[in-house]
Image 1 (cartoon, each protein chain N blue to C red):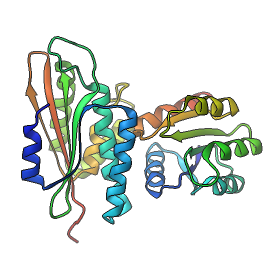
Image 2: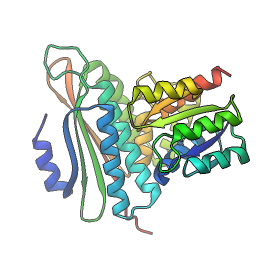
Image 3: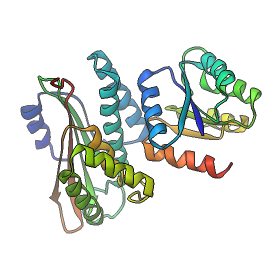
Length: 184
Length: 120
């Protein structure tokens, strides 16, 4: 995994309070979610914001579980490995980073969807999300279809990039930003 | 379908309530532990009870058994972070319809609820 990411995070986002790189299981997601929820409670975040942070974290870790490919270059097997980092800056803004290896075919599905999402306003995302949910489209069994709309409507900004490993595989890095101290 | 949400964590109740409402279902009420769940069930008569297994006092599986004694046809979804196969098998044998592992996404919950709807 790309350790430079961690260094950049410390420089850019301040405090890292949860980080994990490696094989991700449901039991591990459970433990990390509990730890995250404890963190948000200790920081007196309101329940709505805490819920947004947890939900985004759950969606991103489930994506790693469902889509990560083996780091062995010639293997086409799934391998639930990834890097997840939760950071917080001095203003109390949370950043949830996830990074995992995905196949070219998944990149081709995810990238246009994310590019479309970036063009939409928050209200348009919510509207589009409701339409997709009603239609039952954009969901392909393992999630990560409507999930990015779910993440974005709960975030105060998202970023993503794909870093080519070889012709079949890419690192997929995703960041969700959640502002906890909003100006009135 | 009307849901009764049972969890001792307020954050978990908020998440589940939001998921269920966004899926287009109605929340009949919430309960904070097993004892409260039994009382609220009698009072509200929901179609589905989504109940956490690990709660202080009366655990979710015990509360589910008592609820099923009141109404054997009610749909119960047991929510758990523990993978104790014996406990899960025992709950299913008792009449719990579905088990879902924490933490879950809205889509994972939706699949389970749709299966319950189909089985009606």
